[in-house]
Image 1 (tube, rainbow, N blue to C red):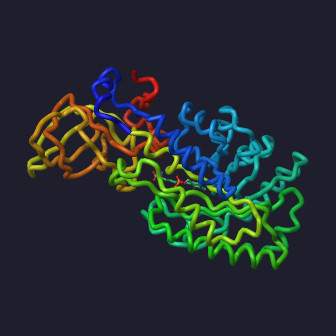
Image 2 (cartoon, rainbow, N blue to C red; image 1 turned 180 degrees about the horizontal axis):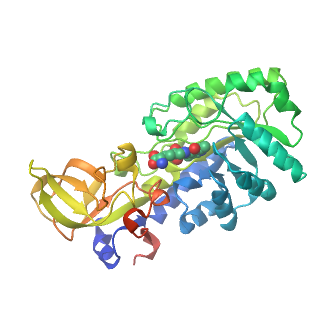
Image 3 (tube, rainbow, N blue to C red; image 1 turned 30 degrees about the vertical axis):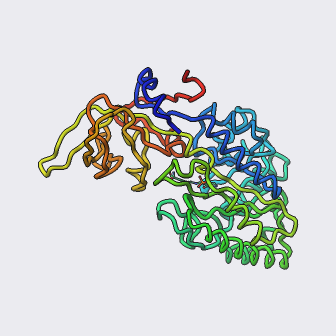
Length: 386
Ligand code: LLP
């Protein structure tokens, strides 16, 4: 995380930009991998969280696999040097060409989200003369107690196949010649902070695995997805997420029957190592008395607050003022929802000050857009700041 000593050195770079603390990334990976190894768990990094080449190169050094959400993500991972045998690929709407590409590469598993998709994979695999390992993504109908916008495993969700549908079609699934149901896949949501939710997930998986096995559909692996949340409120208190807790819950509640267990963490790996550095352009006060600070970043660099009402802690890293004021921090985009935070207290803030928007390493740059023809933000790495 950003130390105040380097704040002045950041003046050398044009804002807005993402600043990545690569030593925190390494520390996070070290922690995740050392606890996972204790239980023999496999971690795939959800590359959708951040596909910055230097970040994924470091992730590769630590031996993680990759979880993808599109054919282009599979290609990006392979071009970054990940072996196809460590890549999984989920997605509710895979195009034919994406399925064909994944099949040609021979990835570890395509995590399949509908019966129609399963039939299509079987057909394309047949044309290629292959048998593709599949993770059946089952919707377990669990409330992950997170922001509704990033909840993916309740009965009405677009993700996964309902368990009832799997049971009703079990014979047809077993008869497919060019797909092998190699595993069971779940992902119930993101930014999960109430970790007991993972206990419910284990209970559901235990009963599904045992029922489906009794019906002759056996799974080789269990992939419980990602979702481990981070501390957006006080990032300095928890720079490395609590991997040990979630692994301990899975270890004590999941009946694996000796099956390998896979995880797909995105946010927990990269969120805390990234921040968005912006400069203050202007101050102004609305007719209602709201004091606005207009920064040179916007929802086109970091869309989470505008899209999900997500909170990111913001700090003025250059002001030395003693007085503190309440401000609303807004961006440059031509959208009224382009607000980073409302009514926060900061030291007196003025044109030219640098504001950091913290915990932005996940779903920041990877969701950036060119709305208003903004440039995509650049990246600055802690290793390069002397
Ligand atoms: N596996 C699957 C199948 C997923 O859909 C996701 C995230 C992950 C793993 C990684 O989840 P994580 O460990 O990062 O929670 N843009 C939103 C988050 C969307 C998450 C999409 N799926 C945000 O900014 O909060």
